[in-house]
Amino acid sequence: METEATAKLLGHRQTKGAKTDKPNLMSPRHISTLPAHNMPEDEVLSRTAVALAGCQMVELELKLYIQDAFNYIRTSLDGRLPFSFSGSDYVDSSLERLIEVFKKLSDNPELIGRLQKFKKERNHLVHRGLSQLMDYDASEDMFSLNTKDFEERLDWITSEVSMLKGAIRFEASRFLEEPSPPTPGASAA
Image 1 (tube, one colour):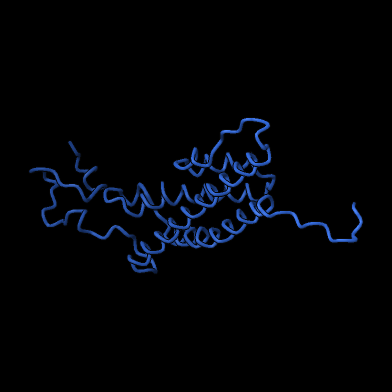
Image 2 (tube, helix red, strand yellow):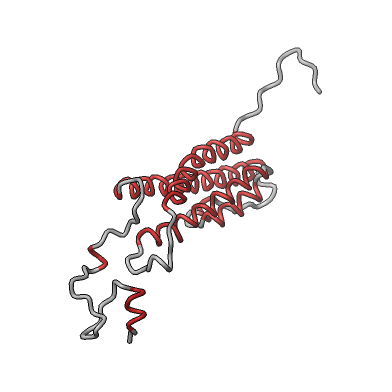
């Protein structure tokens, strides 16, 4: 049972018949959950959706890279050694798992570091930012969402998506493109 002090702290809860009842208080489900900030609610939600879609695109690029790398390895082995790894083995893998596999197929520590930072920011967006933004029952004292920080994180994720997609594609081009045939008359190195 709530005490009067708890009821004041939580403010939005009502109890049956207790003197802490606030009959004129609207249900929390009817109150906008977005804290005051510079952007309208639909813009925040729209930008969040764009950022999350970008995260999915990075995951897709990693899945394609893994699939292409496995196909390249299989072709290079030319049947001399069984190789039954497949990109389809990773179709439902988490971003963390995809980065772990990518690390074993790439020697680009800068890109791997950026992917790990991206994963951390994506996890913050999904697990902390959105829950704080949309949590109907959270007390402002319990969770304080810095909306400026949230908006900056959305901007960073959105801009990082393009860079990461291009960098992953470039990494794949290192083994996907056929080497150019030697120029006639050029000396062999």
